Image 1 (tube, rainbow, N blue to C red):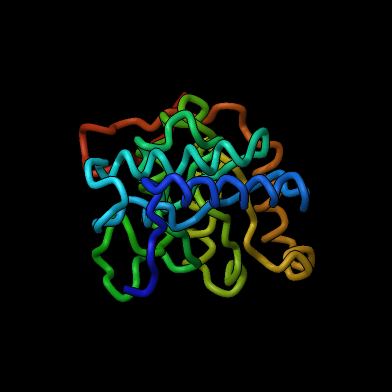
Image 2 (image 1 turned 120 degrees about the horizontal axis):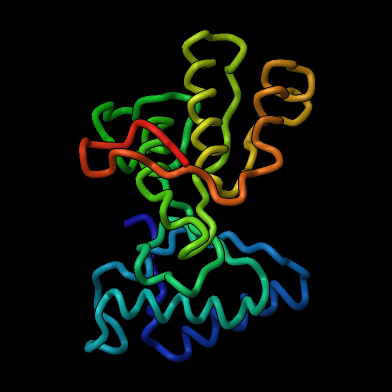
Length: 216
């Protein structure tokens, strides 16, 4: 394994997490906290409390973060969704996006690996969670390579359209200097502001493998 998860069933561990998060907010002034790799709290393993389920351990971890964060905005990422309801303000609801459309190196992956297609699929399927459980985050918008490849232009337009029409949080992952000097990229980015209050509804959730349209 390339990382270890904290044992959130241990009260001293939870106290440490709460204190650390509180310090980031109160002493260093952070008002937005992106908490990533949260699933580590639910990894299989021996725990201080052997009676706690993995879901309970995950919930304890998030509760410790929430307690320390106070009124700061907490965005969960790489997190089991059910355990986070009521404890985070925003949630990454998609796989990592990317400038490429299909997953690499496993092109047939449809849910997990970084890819524009996976971001679009996940964001549309989970759109109904937005403003009900939390603010959806479909991952950042990636516009690089937009002006050099006609296919990349179409794919970028698709990613931007889904980000805009699902109404979630908007983050930009491009060099702003480059963006400012590229008229096409800048025009595309500007379509995302101001964000929609609620976003459209994904149609065809049960009819096919993934929804293909967003409506009112």
